[in-house]
Structures are given as C-alpha cells and as structure tokens.
Length: 192
Image 1 (spheres, rainbow, N blue to C red):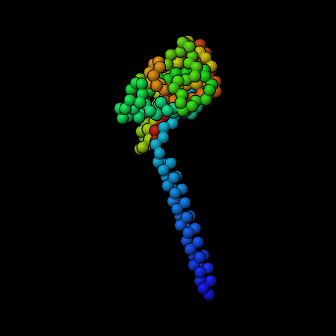
Image 2: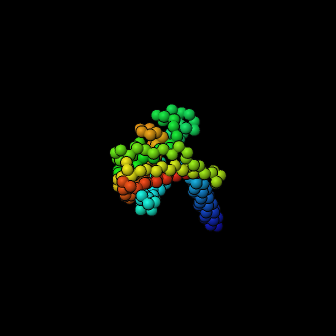
Image 3: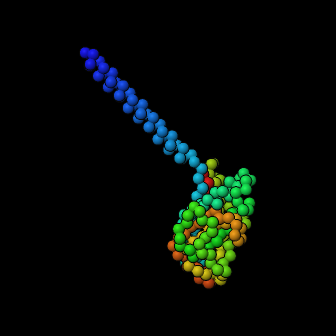
C-alpha cells in the first residue's frame, strides 16, 4: 500500500512537472513570437521601367533590396542627432550601375557605377502613413539614356549627389537602357 501511495504521488508529481514545463515552453514561444512581430523593421523595394523615345514600355524589373548598416546608422542619426553619419542629409539620390555582386549589410556604395551617369535627385520624396504605425517613403528618379545607356543590374539610394552615405542597395536581372530611352527608378522604403 505504501509503495502504491508513493507511486501515485510520483506519477502526480511527474505529470505536474511536465505540465509546468509545457506551459513554460508555450509561454516562452508565445513571447518570442510576439516580440519578433513587435520589432520595428525597415525594408525596401526597387521598380525600374524603361520607356523608348515614343513612351512605350520596353523594360520592367522589380527587386527587393537590402537596407545596409550605414543606412540604419544614418536613420538613427537623423532622428536623434548623433554623429554616426558623415553628413546629416536626406536620402534623395538614386544611382544605377552594372555590378552583379549580391548586396551585403556592409556595403557603402554600389559595385560599378555607370560612367558619365550621375545620381539623380528626387527633391520631393513622397510619404504615406495611411496605416498607423507604418510609413512608406517613395523616391523616384528618371535617368536619360543619352548619358546612362547600359545594361543596368544594380541600384542604390544615397544622401548626396556624390560620395555620401548609402541606405540601400539591390542587384537584379538586366534592364537594358538604350541611348534614346529613359529609365524611371522608383524606390519605396517601408518602416513598420
């Protein structure tokens, strides 16, 4: 009888421990998922459209991008006035190139800028805050094939017409820009 009594208590104790461990594991997992979904994020997307001299679309490409370390540092700098960036300027310049190496978080420039093709500024970027707690900024630049004809495979967003800091970079399939074409590059970055 004593053995049976201790056996029953042992089973109850083991069952209770397993239950507590399951509840603890569930609560930790639930907390981890909630914490991950509550983390602020910044991510972006490029859209490239080529128009010929008659205005017809001859090329189109969409590509997600990588927000790089310097870009994240500069966002903090612009918000809090620290000295993490080399300049405290707005990210309004897009640069295109022919590099193909995949972006990394440590990138500070595009790989191969197109010679003679300057960065193009969008001095009036748009912002959308239709959803509370989210904001999407849009920068759009138009490049002329007269100076930027190339097989474009990368793009980046900067805070200066030359040098400066890069916030994001992307590589993608070839977008061919002829000498009579125009290339419209639209960059959307979303904060949530």
